[in-house]
View 1 (cartoon, rainbow, N blue to C red):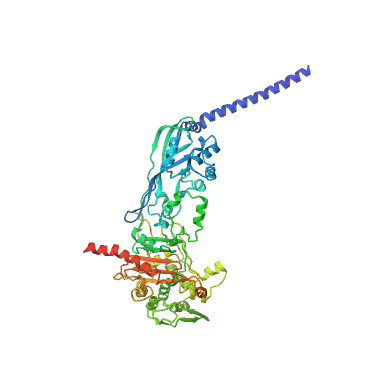
View 2: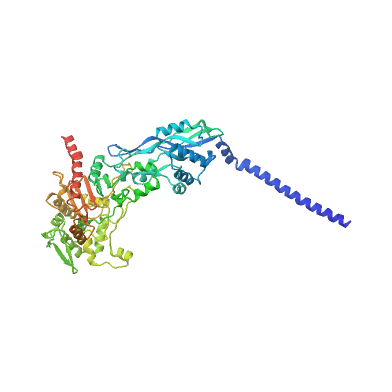
Length: 601
């Protein structure tokens, strides 16, 4: 009997366990059913809809970029592209083989492109080839039933009608990278979308890019389109008008043809840049075609550095142009007066070292204006001997050196102004007075960009008011000027020397323009030693051991234009850079000054 009760207890216990297991399973089933019907309803409804509806991204046309006279520098042209929708692909290898044969594509490049976007949703179209030829379009259209996974579309394609002209100013577009797509949470990116990578295209990308549209269409079980349900047209990006004058830009680039260097011209009254040339240049249209790794490697390793925007990224010793800053510093510090004179015999011994003037016979006795006119090294060695490096650094900073100008262009470099603190921080050494002598004539560890030189020249032209250089004419851009605290009478004494340099037989005479009162200063930055240059000359090799500088403004009173020229390995500033600047002044005068005079008459 006891045995029977024991067995009965086991049965009851097992029945209870079975009951609770069944109850738990029932609860789970009810929960998942409820989750499916309520919580995940929208998710699975969208998936179901996606099986019969397809949403297509429509690229917006980028805004136009124009010069100050509304000449179009960047526009859009219609172009065919073909994309692959991965969720419609049944056999990747077979599809890749067919596409390579059909469109003459490299198999490894195509496979790599598709694999790059594996982590993105499979419904996102991946551009297989763009800028299709008409015969390729015809083939794809004829065989579209055979390739439901392909989508043929017309898209607005960026175009630069002047090719290399103003390339560093305009910049270029490149396909958005996978990293950018994942990192930028403020915007939804699509594979193949183009984004500004340099220049104005990058600086104003959010304004230029416009607003995307979308197309919703029905599809059959094979993914073939069966008609539109809804279309929202994309909105074109905002047009931009630059301050650049196309004629001045063409002239600047023509003057730099075959050379390495930069030319920048700006209006000192407003800060508007009128020309912005960097050489060698490149054709931004090339970037629209999606470089192969080999093509990209070739461009970035070009010894001429065509992608380098030398106007804001080229760092150079300013050479004798820095004598303007030295003169202002010495006058404002009361170390000299305009009448202070020094004798130049062709060299001078300071701290037991011999420092030479560029003019070996010597200039004789000169006051400040004559020293600027003739760019006498010995005069400015004397100033360097009487000033310490921190005083020079203070005035260099006032002139805008060692910091960005703030121009609306990405990638600007700050340059370098040496000081006691800088040398101790970077080299762990103290500054020696003998080093100041080299800085006094713009040599040593002093680095500037051509735009910084132009902005400092504008400060002199404005008698002490510093301007903010700008490239784009926007309502939000108001002319900005800040008085740096240098007396206008002090600056006028320096301008007298700059005027004589161009108009009275000085080193800047090559920039002379009759009736336009150009004021300027030349500079020649030594790149290799005199000893090395002499050795190369003895071997019969022609060598130019200096970079060539000129920076000036015109006219002397109520200035309208600043021009800065830098030619790498161009020789003496008076021989190369000054005449080039003269050509820019001449064109500006013919176009703006004489034209206004004629209209007035």
